[in-house]
Length: 108
Image (cartoon, rainbow, N blue to C red; front, top):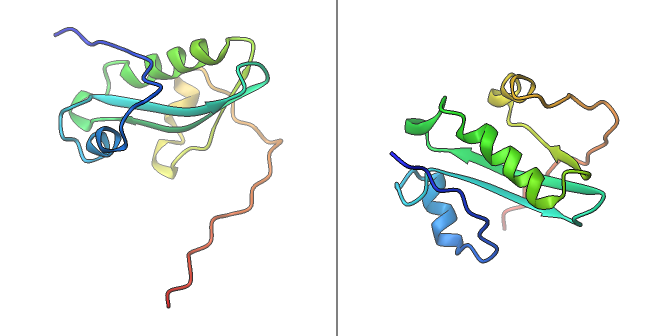
């Protein structure tokens, strides 16, 4: 099997949703926001469970950082279940950030 990695600046939201629902259209996705200089915020990293443990997530992180500029800082907020994963692929835990947590919208 050949895995193709691509930078998709105009990825349709429906394709991205399909990844999260494991439709098979894509194996994994990395979505980020960057200034291509100082930092890159990797907001979403997802790999279909059927393809995990093959280095795809690590390669997506590497390629995201490369596309943003290797001299920029890559920043990621981890889902609780993935906290042990990121140190294994060489990412450092940060203690110098601050957050305002999401609040649920009031239902009318």
